[in-house]
Length: 355
Ligand SMILES: [Zn+2]
Ligand SMILES: [Zn+2]
Image (cartoon, rainbow, N blue to C red; front, side, top):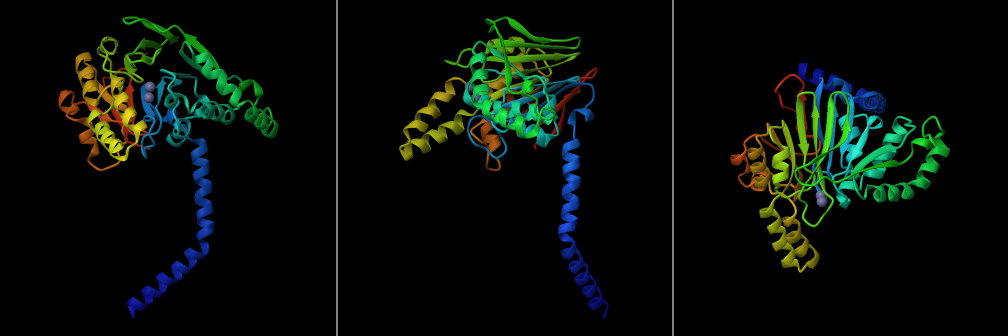
């Protein structure tokens, strides 16, 4: 009798819940939208230097590794290094205020590092009614990249201004403005941004035939990080990474790329057969990045630009190929991986694993 009563009660509850399903869902969605629009991840961070991957991958599609994109919060500044596919969308998903991006810094002009620029500039523009264009710093050649995007997005910007008005999409804030700097020679760093607490410098890296190619070192108060962009293991990186807190290094695994090469050859895919040989001469392996971290004496190593995509469970240990025995303080990045380095401390805290 008691069981029957309980079953009746449960059935009645299900009928009520099903009847109310749309109402409940609508209310959850409304609350979710309020939370998403009001989110500002920066407000939750302590004073310090904070680094997140808005894109942990390279040019290949990967479920947890979008095109290369690194966001840096230095005090009140929000800088983005490279703008790969989905970078801006991942920033929104992570709760970063895209409308408050202060500048983008490009490492080089390979497509996977720039193909999210148009979207990043557009989201920054309309999400905060910005009245000045997005600043895009880069070595010589950045002017052509920026002017090409501006031309491609000109019609879209006009449509958005007409439809939403100057209060949302003022024409003065559309697109981007190029901020070229001189690529420094080996052994020299060129200053690209400075304020009272922050110094951002570009250094030359070794991306084989691709030149110019730079990495960026940032110091905020007593904390520091270096983002390599795409590079072979390089003595210049070791020199400038000396003693920094966090090294964010590209990593392409030769053992896994060789497997892809075998598959491509078997399928008679001549393009992939050649690409899977070519890419190994201008990227670091995980082992090379770990050696760099050890030689430079950095606090922690975060691998990004992960190639090939890591999809299978356990694949990451094959990818590492022993890198963790060379330098144990190592993390394989995914979209959303975030580190926080509060100023006045020695802490390097992993505050988020993935999106
Ligand atoms: Zn790349
Ligand atoms: Zn590249």
